[in-house]
Image (cartoon, rainbow, N blue to C red):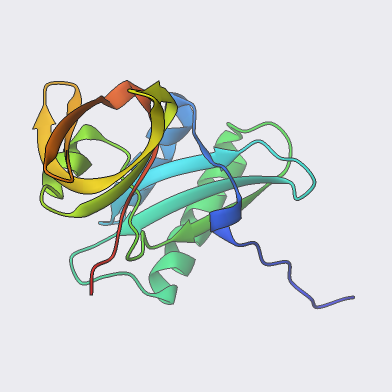
Length: 166
């Protein structure tokens, strides 16, 4: 029907990191606008089509106007540079309460927070961890799980998100 807009729930889509060239381009545009580029993900497609998702933040938080402003600017640059083959949907959003963690610095910054991590492959017989961030040691993310300290290799992390605590 004309005028209807397709809405997708981000939790149902498995996103992947983007190519460094695309991430660098997006980061440059977002940071030039005085926002933090929290991270960039993409889904290469499927029945719903491809998605490029950009998470932005700033000290006072992110509103709809911020997302629209960044989306408009980023769309123009992506149209000119054309770093992604084919059609895709661009989504710009705040990281939300269940903020994704993309970089080692994010794990340092949120030490003490509760986190859920899913690994690319099993570590000590499991792929999923739910615990408290204890910091970073080199390339290892440290977690406190039920009184035990676990070191998770950063390169083996597929998805990591903060767990909101109320």
